[in-house]
Amino acid sequence: MKPLNEMELWFESRSSNEGFARSAVSAFIAQLDPTIGELNDIKTAVSEAVTNCVVHAYRNTIGRIYINVKITEGAVVIIKIRDKGIGIENVAQAMEPLFTTAPSEERAGLGFAVMQSFTDNVNVRSSPGKGTTVILKKRISRRVYNG
Amino acid sequence: MINRVSFNENEMTYRLSGEIDHHSAKTARELIDSLIQQKKPSVLKLDFSDVSFMDSSGIGLIMGRYRMMHLYGGELCVVNVPDQLEKIMFLSGLGALGVIEKKGEAYETVE
Ligand SMILES: Nc1ncnc2c1ncn2[C@@H]1O[C@H](COP(=O)(O)OP(=O)(O)OP(=O)(O)O)[C@@H](O)[C@H]1O
Ligand SMILES: [Mg+2]
Image 1: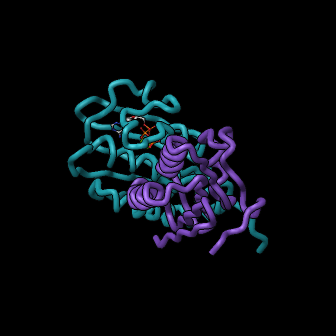
Image 2 (image 1 turned 90 degrees about the vertical axis):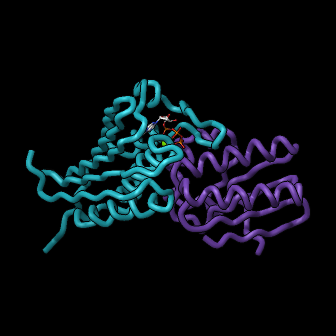
């Protein structure tokens, strides 16, 4: 399906860019007039996916994180977050709540669980050594205007 | 992020502010832990009044302080949780630990 609107950006995997990434996506989506709750959900889910690129994918290195956002028919937002980092061996296991490979760094193992409960759909594709792509989908409830 | 700390007998209140993510949690963690070690409070209150955003890094921050306080035989309490953070706080299972007080519940900030 052809998107009604689309944007793309990349940035370096520095932790200081985590706030930039979620704000940029939320600013783009603002045109759909989402509720504060919906915007907060999207910011939180994007923050999780981007943090995973910084913390896990490019551990001890700096690489590029790519974000593509599409707005499609029916106010459905599709957000793709991609890295070219270490990848994930077992995606199903990684997505289980509380699973983490970095417990000593106070990771809760809840990133994927948060993405799942804060969006309508989460899709993860990964190949070890090549990288990971996370696709988040969320429908924005359009508020009705009178006049 | 400007955080404030206050003391009331054996109770230490640490008031976080701004957005808590992986980037900002690191500084907050270091500050809180050095205060815990210096002051050894029996109760640590983490005040979320001025926190506008939090992701799972905030959960890690709370869980880590919870474990640390228990190690010292103390208690942790999360207070003044704003509406927009309720969803993530309760998703984390922190609700079940009984450490969360919502905004305006039985507690007032001591400045
Ligand atoms: N982009 C990625 N590249 C490589 N590994 C990843 C990536 N995203 C997630 N992982 C792996 O999946 C695990 C689970 O991720 P999840 O976000 O659920 O938890 P976490 O990051 O460990 O903890 P939290 O998100 O609560 O701080 C991670 O510990 C890591 O091993
Ligand atoms: Mg994570």
